[in-house]
Length: 304
Image (cartoon, rainbow, N blue to C red):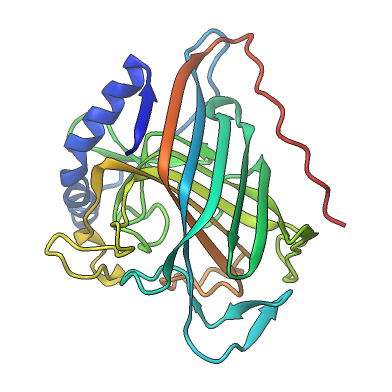
């Protein structure tokens, strides 16, 4: 059972998000079809004294989404890298594992940390992210604008909050249905495997990995599948038809190398991609006093 601790302000946002969800894909499509040219919203720094939010998220009940699709062509430190499907929309290769994640961030200040640990068929993993950078190849999400028919893009936010992502939003590839994200974090991650640094052997952003974490409504069912509105297995070619569960919560954690140039393929052809999901999620969102300090992240051994 998912437990959510929200302030009155955030509860209002969550309730309005559920009502808006079913209509968002239609409005995005209409805006594109009409050739809308409205400038996107650029999020400016919050002035001293303005309301700021502090997020604390914990997750357990983990699941590894990863399936080897043929003879292994490439390994990274003994872990199969290619050919691998890390989205497994049909649920085959979406397997329960032991794991947990903690997120403590202040989005307006671009401060905070993400730590996670899990054990799967490849061994014992740890993940740490304290450096947050906005995505290079797409926006940080879309939001409902000043009117119900307006959709605005959010630019250059490394820690986004209360945004829609994926699906046919244009904010990230259509690897998942359109999801409302309470929190979305991008940046550079340090990873260990069995107590040793798991180093990115590719050019960028070696030796670190590109990390992405989302706290979203439910996109994956209990059997591990991702579905369309008609109950079929999700397909990114029908990105506007994915179904989600607004009453559910998930934390998605991925790490990978970077793509240069970006091909626009879906799924993106990363040389290495790892995808862990946490399904028992608790969120606490409070208004952060200007004097409140972000807690320091746990100390991990640095990569050699």
